[in-house]
Amino acid sequence: MMIRQFLLWTQHESAGRRAEAASSLARAYLYAKLDPEARWEAKTAVTALLDDPSPLVRRALAEACANAAEAPRPVVVALAQDVPEIAALVLARSPVLTDADLVDCAAIGEEAAREAIAGRPAVSPMVCGALAEVAGPEALRRLAGNPGAAITPGSLLRMVERHGDTGALREAILARPDLPLEVRQAVTARLAQSLSAFVSACGWLSPDRSERITREARDRTTLGLAEGAVREDLRRLVAYLRRNGQLTAGLILRAMLSRRMDFTEAAFTDLSGLAVERVAGLLHDAHGQGFTALYRRAGLPAALEPAFAAAMSAWREEADGLTEESGPALSRRMIERAVTACEGLPFAESHALVALLNRFDAEAAREEARLLARSIASEAAVAAVLDSIPAALIESYRQDRLRLAA
Image 1: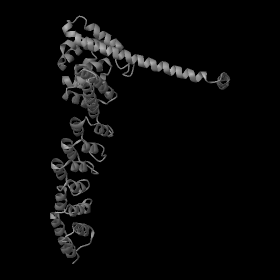
Image 2: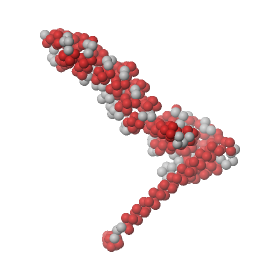
Image 3: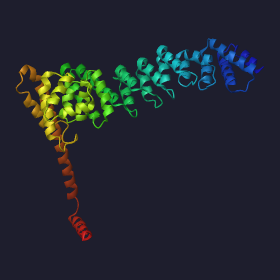
Image 4: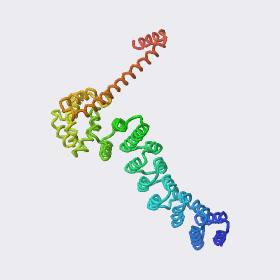
């Protein structure tokens, strides 16, 4: 009898009254203890209300059903296909919707629907992958900032590829815990690309000069990110760089001249197809013949081989007692040896390489100067503090130390 009264109420000419009735009827179905016949009638009535022309009525249904695991599935699926402001209510919360439902809604829905899906308490890798392919920057930012979103590295890379020029999205991705190394590199590379485009558009640098500066800055950042990474992370990073055309001879040469031998080994392993242990043995071959074979198998430019061989020889000579953190990022001694090895080459073959090595040397010299300036500044600060301490206090401290030693 109560259900029939609700049904009569839903025929009211006022949309507001019909919405009240729809909400009450849906909640009665979901939470009241109804007998089987009344429950069937209530479910039928709720389903019929989907045809109401007023969005107020359908919104009332969506609000009532959004969090309910017992909501009728046909009703929830239909509401998820409704106008964006109604669909978003169930897309954001309903436990009734499956991954297939969510992927379908992401594919054909409005951007508001995608944002709602991106903010769900839990988003599966399948749904994250679908959003990564079709969603706009704001939905992807919301997805990246959602701790309940299980986003795979491949989906994160796709997000960067499609909308990595959006600063808010880059920040949200970088803030994710345990971010894969290759994703972090992709984000920083995209930032460098955006800055390069801005500088070129402003006319501050020529496109060629801007592109070169950006490439070299990206290489420095890549090696900085790779520092201290475990072998598996380096393997994935190198594979990603190769797929995207960033595993260049210049980057590998910079890694070698910076004494980043873990990265160098990973790069030659990927390019040569040999086992990492075999690559390590050839790189460290004291006679140099193993490195020659490895270099040629990796398919790197023949014109650069003398510089690589000279740099590797210099590294072997200074490897004892040397750590990757020793000195500046680039070794000026290794650079000098590489330049010397190129002196006998024809100008047409060597000028670009020598120019690159000279830029490396200038960069290393600037880094040495920075380190020295910081050291001098630190010593001056310590001296200033000591000068401010009264001589009597220092003498008293010295006497106390002597008594303790005795």
